[in-house]
Image (cartoon, rainbow, N blue to C red):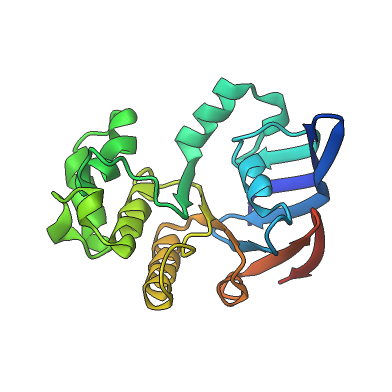
Length: 225
């Protein structure tokens, strides 16, 4: 099974005045094609920083990250953006839908950016998969939190990404709604064969993944799977 993501001896330090904050220290792991992988740990453990580095949203200080066979260390900002556009999907805790666009328009934005033909048709199919075929013309403000996250899921899978990064995808939802989103996320992931990396503080969610690592103070404290 090919490795979609390889992280080797990764470290990240931020400077604050004269102080240096070591956020990540010598982190290494791999994620295979189609595999589900969770990153867990308390607040301040470096989870979100690690996710951003793996997705090429920030630059590496020390170590290497290989994403879809490309070394992120060797890519400039434009190169990393191109790689994300071709291979990566995102789901965020706060949904990040465009408020002036309808549910359907939010879903097809990535399709239109790539010049996909029949983008609207594909968008409607995706909304149907997440159970929102009758809400396509509604704006985010007219949707519940759970419905907004379902739109975000449909958008994330629109380009059939090789890997999907989900940052606390149920963090802003109640338990019942969160459970439905989790189920939908894993179902879509399995259907499309996408590698899935989830950042969460929820151990119950993490245990549903094929593998998980637990961070503490920027280091891997435990690896399961």
